[in-house]
Amino acid sequence: MYDPLKRLFDLVAASLLLVLAAPVMLVVALVVLATMGRPVLFRHTRPGRHGTLFDLVKFRTMHEVDPARGLVTDAERLTRVGRWLRASSLDELPELWNVLRGEMSLVGPRPHLVKYLELYTSEQARRHDVRPGITGLAQVRGRNAIGWEEKFTYDIEYVDERSLLLDLRILAATVRVVVRREGIAAPGAATWHEYTGPPKIREGVTSESAR
Image (cartoon, rainbow, N blue to C red; front, side):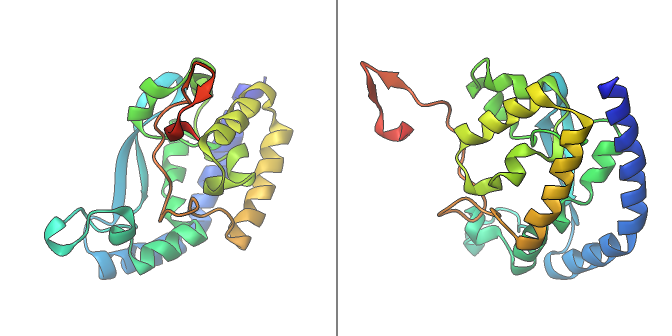
């Protein structure tokens, strides 16, 4: 019964949140348009449940890559408005549309990049047994401030222990994390560090790149 009840909860909650957040989303859209121009929305292909690809929708927070203007890295491309949107998590609001479409859930493992699919271990790949979420266990236990292995551990913990009660606890904890602006970026990065695969151990010695 969990899956159909969770889907019903997602539909009702996402619909209500979209109505309530509509004025805020309009203001954000106008601010993004005025400071960064078009497009206002950022669309990126991500893997969902069972690895099925879908277009994630967020408010744009970065300039396009433009080497001539010195806009190459995330730190260079991320705008002041973009930093504020990420810090407040307002850039995530359009993902409610992904929830309505059934591509995402309010709660679940965050959808990462498609290129990471081939890097996952069989255990890590289990994160795709459920719909990805706007928030999740890893987001309320450190967000981008924790390492990839820890994130995957929390993702699998959610897959194994998911329940409506756990979902409600994660949603409540998400409010606290957003208000406190915790774990917005990985240490030493403007956003996060790329995932390069699980640590490789050869002859009992962990490689420098895996430390």
